[in-house]
Amino acid sequence: MLALANKIAIVTGASSGIGRATAKLFAEEGAKVIVAARRQAELDTLVAEISDADGTAVALAGDVRDEAYAKALVDLAVEKFGGLDIAFNNAGAVGQMGPISDLSLEGWRQTLDTNLTSAFLGAKYQVPAMVERGGGSLIFTSTFVGNTVGMPGMTSYAASKAGLIGLTQVLAAEYGPKGVRVNALLPGGTDTPAATFKTPESRAFVENLHALKRVAVPEEIARSALYLASDASSFTTGAALFADGGVSINRT
Image (cartoon, rainbow, N blue to C red; front, top):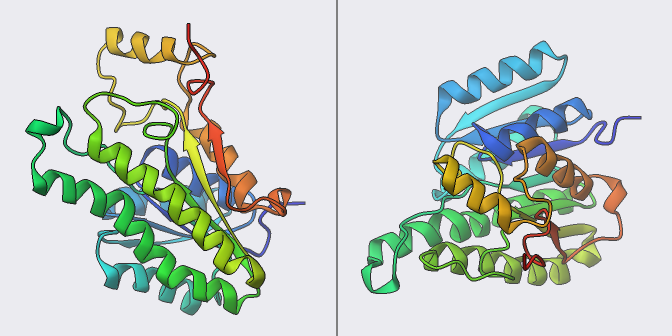
């Protein structure tokens, strides 16, 4: 049986990387998927690939920092498919990097808006729709950075992603009685277009940080998202689930 049969899901940051892989996997597992990102052309290509594989998806392009867009995604799920069961709030950005003395206030705000405020806006509209359905699964993409590891030069990224853990815990406690599970997924280094390792030397350095001595491919992180979205994790809420290749515990 398909893990997400008859479920309706929103996936943000779906134009590439982890979001794209997750949208495809959710559709393969029976979900009707609303794919969200800024780039319309990439979303259209993704919808076509899902359709060609006998899946169901629709696209809506926009900026996750925009409250009207957060509402529009949920409205589309309800109008097109009848409700919302799953939301994978995955969109994010590394943002401006460097020592805190060189970090601009605008750079700080842009990173927090992209990574944290967007999650708040998504949840604001997603949670009531899930309550209407009798429950659901809300997932945020956080990271080990700022949770178990301090990476120099990543102040705003770490702060924004750490904030998602607090958001996860509070929402899990608030909405658990109404059947909504809320969890954070913490990937390790992943081979995506947005990855910070751009040279063979930087990639080798990042790989060596992990206990598995490699980085993930997006499909591996997507399978962890599928676990949190599905009934396989029916008693899991308020958790920070590591899918980090052991980077949080490795010291070699």
